[in-house]
Each structure stands twice: as structure tokens, then as C-alpha cells.
Image (cartoon, rainbow, N blue to C red; front, top):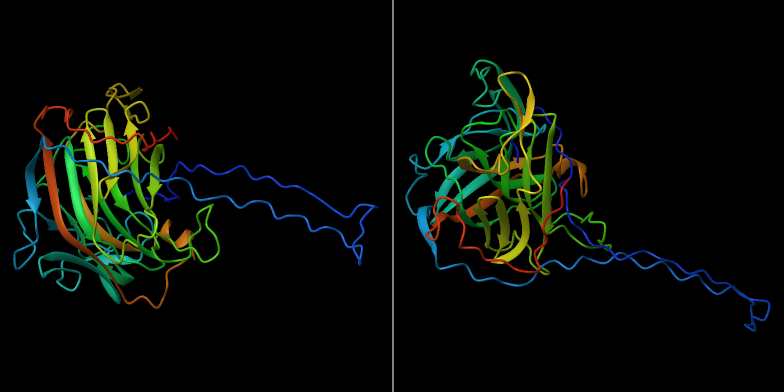
Length: 369
């Protein structure tokens, strides 16, 4: 999602079905008998309609076994589960927040984790934490603060079901994300070793810019995406957007889940299976020891251990270039509230994660980019 090395983030790929636009012309004929002999108005061409997003709720398999969880019931964030990134790097997307480890930006309140972006000037390290150039004395100043928690070096997994119940922030310029990165970059730098975006959303509640949106429609879509291919700038991505009619993700909690098995990844919101990607569509390429660019084995790069990240970004090259554009200056606080994070393994086949699928025939297979 946001740990992207000097890249420009563009709109996510979506599979959108639109009605074919057609028009019919008309006009007064020489036999027109109307009093004013005016032309018959030309009907407006039909507007593209909202695609038929999946609606079927599927039943989660009873063969998923709980492997790890954080219910956020303690008095403070569990340091055995999460570490804080601390930087003003901008996520590689020209985002406008500094990430801190302050309780002002991440805190446990009433049994939930609150990740809070605030409008305030802050100065911190200019490089991302894992960069060899990270230096507390080389700083950058940005107009917002927030938090990015990660389980790197503490908890990671290969295959299983990852489930997060959360209430999202809204407003033009907000960018909450629940996602995963490889713990070891086996196939090379981002995104050759992959990235799994369980849930991203930008500008919720702002005017919708979907191709099928009508005047007055607001943004309610969430997105599930994979990043892969070669190392930047030879990376690619593919994904799917989703909405539930009438649902505003900032008004209540919703459950975002990912089922990940060898060669296949599926996305869910409130147990509605809305997208699938398979290894027929993704790939990883890297340079071997002989300097030759090769394609990795079939299921790479999503055949390695990945860890979790939770964050709220402000602005950036995606959020600021869609919907109403820019960042709403009236937003002084935006928070993502996380009720729980749970990770399951498939008891049918722990090694591959296969046998616990919850599949809907409505969910599209995301096309190759």
C-alpha cells in the first residue's frame, strides 16, 4: 500500500462492467403538426449504471483454526505484537504525515485500537525505518501526524485467513490501509517480492468519481489489491473495488478478510466474497546471480512469509488525485478504529492453506494487468 520506494501511486485496477452507451437522434419532420413546429428533443444518452457488485454472504469454514489474535483489550498496545514506524518519509507517495509512536496517534480505548491522523506540524526522520540511510538527525517536516503499526519481526505468516474488524475514517485526503508486506524480500525490492492489500480506501464520503457515479453520489468503495512483477519501476498491480449499497464504512464497524492459499487469494467484506486473484495472473521477476532476469516459480512472490501493517495516511499521489482532489483543509483528525485482528490457519492443509475456501460464484477473477 504505502511502503513503496519512490513510486507514483495511480488509481487501482478495477473490474467494472458498464452498460454500452448509445444515443438516438430525432427531429421535427416536414409533417410535424405541432403549433410551434419545434424539433423533437433528442433524448439524452443513457448514463452508465453501477456494476453489479457481489451481494452473496458466504459461510466461513469451520476448519479455520485461530492461530493468533489481538483483541486490543489491554491498557496499551502490545509491544510483543506491534512495532511503530517513526518517520516523515511520506510513504514513497508524497503523503503528508509523519508516523510517530505517540499516544496522540495510536492508543487503546474501550477495547479497540485507535489510529489517529492529526493536523499538526511535526518534524521527524526523513527516511523510512528500514532504509540504510535512516538517521534521526536528518529530518523532514510535514503538516500531519499519524501512526503505522507493523508486526514485522514479531508475527508473520504464510497462507491462512486474516480477519480485521474496523471502522474507517472519511474525508477527502484520508487513506486508511490494512495490508501485508514480505518479511524477507526473497525476490528483490518492492514490488518483486509482493504486497497484499487486504483493504484500502481513499476519500470516503467525498464526491464519487466512479465512471458510473451520478451527481450527489459519495465515495464508499474499498479496494483489495496485489502488487508484484519486478522491482520498481518494473512493478505492476491488479485489484478490485467493492461497495455494499447503502453502507458507509465510516459509520460502523465492518469485517475485512483475506483468504490466502497456495496459488490463490480471495477478498471479503462482511463475508461477501468480492474478488479472487490466482497465480495465473501474478508473477515475480528478479535478476539471478548471473545477472540474468528470470521469472520465479509459479506461485511467487506470494509463497513467502508476510507480516501485517495498519495505518492511516493523509494525502499522497493516489488520494490527492481522485474524487475532489487534494486534502480537505478542514479535517483536523481522522481515525481508524480496529476492534480486533485475527489470523487463522486451515486445519485441512496447513502447508498450502487449501481446503477451507469460502467461494461465491458472484466474485470475479481479477484480470491480468
